[in-house]
Every structure is written in structure tokens, then in C-alpha cells.
Image: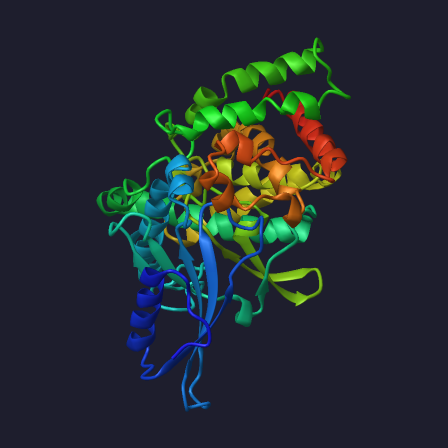
Length: 417
């Protein structure tokens, strides 16, 4: 019995199978949208509350259903299938394998068997069936006190510290497992493929076209003919090859990374306003095996502001490495062998410019108002190209231009650009 049906038959069938497995004989489903416009670009989300019809005492089941976009053109042009494959492997195989490794180490961070810390429980994941039907059924973290931070507001040190802490545990677990159980680790590591920065991905041609709008964004501070403009142009002209190189594995010090670490893929639980108690990492569609530095610079150069970075970033990087080292040590390996402070600093110098690459691509969309972001299914079905669809002109343009210029200037100051 349903109060509202999910308008996607295969998702409805999967939901019914989960409800039956959880012991619901006459399930009733209350369905609502799982995200707002601008919160999710590669899928469609539904929030579902499952209750037993006629039994108000039976605890409800609160779920998030994540499926592919309804538009076939959108799925094709954005290569959605490969992104869902990565996330399917993350929830079905990789995270559970890392959780089992942690369980063997008897660390107290594992609160539930088979559930990797700082992630949502996956009740079901389907992949490889009919085109466009890949689906995840995840625990809804909102009833547990988790909320999403406003993507237009820069994260402060409390939020960044909490995210770095959760990332340090993910990175440390994969590094320790690779060192101690290399054959087992290789099986899960090789499930991930590079989804975005792949020379065979046709969307990259559109991304490079989109990035040319950067010249307009920086025109007031760095007009054509300036030295900074020339540096930016050289970066954009070689963008695809540069980003493909930056996400590749390094000689030493690789880890399973989140891959898409920005505000909307993070949920926060608070002890009191502004004091973060816990973090939940969402959306593993861009996960990869490479230097953990990529997760860090993506977050800080797209989701914080320059004033914060000037005051806190150096100390926060050191704090991350301290947390990572302690976690590696707790898991039975030597952090100086797996990821020394010197190696971490070298990776920042070599790969830190990845933060610029992500900032140029994402900040214009991250800062846009919900009403300024088009209906993606409708836009793709109307025949628009990705570069046309994501041509978002925003009321936030002064803040957008400032943030992008700030990142560019910092990259030059650091010697990374």
C-alpha cells in the first residue's frame, strides 16, 4: 500500500523487496523528494518512510533511494553509467571489505558490523541490469540528526576538521590494508575506474569549453594580457591532460579516496549549533585510488574562503596528517613508511593544483541559487549540450568571481600554478 508511488517502476520493485526483507508484511510508503534542485547532478533521489499498515507500534524504516536520471540523453552525455558503477562497488564491496579489516583490528570506531565509519548503511544496490536502472537504497541519515550545510556558505575550521578526521580514517584504513593484505586490497582497489578525468570521456570536451568562461570571471582582476591570465589560459588549454595526470596513482602513498568531497556530499551532526559531532560521507561516484591530497584540496579550495585558508589551512593540513598517522599506527602499520610528512608535502606540491582544477569547474554551480539551475533532464532532452546546460549565470557572480580569483592567486603564491 502506498501514500505516494515512486514514478520509476524498477525503483519501486527494489523498495518493495527491501521492505519485505526487513519484515514488513503490509508496507505503506510515504515518498518525497530526496534533494533540492542543485543538490545532485548525476542522479535522482527519493526519501521514503516505510511503515506497517495497521501497526503503528512497529518502527518505521527510513530510506534514501538513489537512481539514474530519467533522461536517456542526460545519462548518455554525462556518462552516468560509469559513475554508478563506482558507487555500486563502493557500497557493495569496497567499504564492507575495509569495515571487515577494521573489525579484525578491533578498533572501537566500528559501531555496527559491516558498516564503515562515517558512511550510510546500504540496504541494497543494483547494477548491470537494464540500461538506466542502477539504484542504491541507503539509510536516511536525517532522522539520526544529520543535516546538510548550505553549499553557498564557506565551511569553517570545525566543519573542515571533522571532514578531515573522517577522511583520515578512510585513507588510513586503505593504506594499512594495502600494506598488510596486498592481494585482498588489490581486488577492491581495481574495482574503481576513473570516471571523470578520463581521456575517453566525451564530456571532457564540454568541460574544457565551460572553463573558458573563467576568462570573464577573472577579467576585472586579471585581464587578457596579464601574467596571471596567461597562467590560467595555459592551465585551461591543457586541462584534460593535466587533470588526468593529477588523479593518477603516485609512486607511493596512495589511498582509496572519496573523490567528490564537497559540501553537498557531506552531512553533519551537531552537539550544539556550530559544534560538529559527526560527519557522514555521501556519494562515492568519483572514488579512486590515488594520493589522499586530492580529497583535501578539492574540499578546501571549493568550499572555504580565502580569509579562512590564510588563517587555518597550514595548521589544518598538519592536523590531518597527524590524524592519519595515528590511525595508521592504530591499525598496525608504520605511518612513516606508508605516508610520511615529507611525502604528504611533496604530494601537495605536485598535486595541489588539482584544487584549482575543481574550483574552476564547480564554484560557479556550487554558488548558484536553486532557481538558477535548470531542469537537467528537460535541458538534455531538448537537445542542449552539456556546455549549454551548465551555462549558469548567477546573482552570486561577484562572490563567484572573487572566490575563483582568490584560488588562482593562492595557487601562484604556493608555486603550484
